[in-house]
Length: 324
Image 1 (cartoon, rainbow, N blue to C red):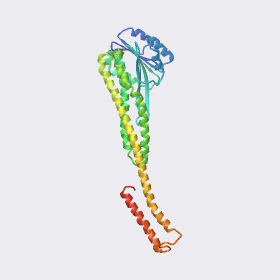
Image 2 (image 1 turned 90 degrees about the vertical axis):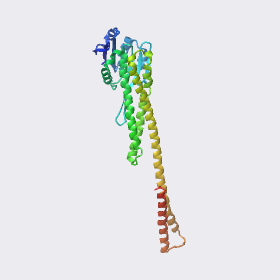
Image 3 (image 1 turned 45 degrees about the horizontal axis):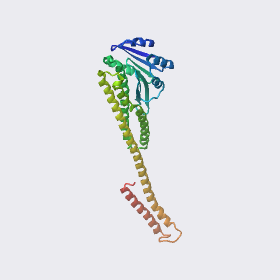
Image 4 (image 1 turned 135 degrees about the vertical axis):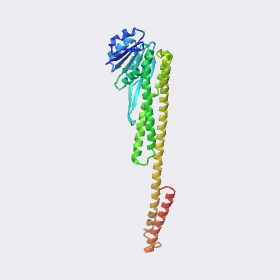
C-alpha cells in the first residue's frame, strides 16, 4: 500500500493520509510531502504522472527495473535512480535494492518495484535528523542518499576485509586450503563486479544533486550533501583499490600455481633421473653377450654397488640444489 508523510514548516503533521489529498496539501507553500509507492500498478503511474506532470521519459525509467544509477533533470522536476546494497558475511551474495525517486520543489516520491529496499531505515534517518526537516525536500533527499551511500561504503569495506583474509589463504600449502582460496577468489571477484556497477556512478549522481540547478538543496544542507559526496568518492576509490587488490591476488594465485607446478616437475624430473641410473645399469648387465663380470658374483656386486652409489650421489646433489 502507498505510504506518505506531510511536513509543514519543518514539522511532521500527518502520515498515511489519502493520496488524493496530496494536491490540497501542496497548495500550502510551507508543505512538503513524501509519497512511497511499492509495487505500483500502471494506474498508479498514471495518477502520479497526472498529479505532478512528470515527463514521460522519467515515468518510463521508473516503470522498468535495472536502470543505471542516474539523476535526470527536467524543467520542474528531477528523476533519480539509485541502489542500496548489502553484502553477505562471506561475500558470496550481493543484494542490490533499487529505488526510483521523483523530486519536485515540494514533494519526494519513491517508487519501489520490490520490497528489498530498506525504506524503514531511510525513515529512521529522517526521524533522527528532524532538526533539518525545515529545509524542505532537500532534507528528504539527503536522508535517502546518505543511507544509499553508507550502504555502499559498508559493503566495500567488508569486501576489503575479505580480500585481506583471502591473501593469507593463497600461500597455504594444504590442497584443501588452496581450493578454498581459489573458490573464494572468484566469488569475491563476482561480488566486486556487481558492486562497481552501482557504486561508481553514485559519485556523479550526488555531484549532480549538489548543482544549483536542482533548487532543492538549501545553504544549511550544503555541508551535509558535501559529506555524502565525500563518502561516495571514498566508496568509489575504495572500490578501485579492492579491484587492484583482487587483480594482484589473481596474479599471485597464478604465480603460486605456476611455482607449485614447477616444483612438482622439478621433483618428478629429479626422481626420474635417479631411477634412470639403476635402469641403465641393469639394462647393461642384462645383455646376452659376455662382458666383464659375466656370470660372476663379483659382477653382480659391482652392478649393485654402482646402482647404490650413483643413486645416492644424485639424491645428495638434487637435495642440495633443493630439487627434492
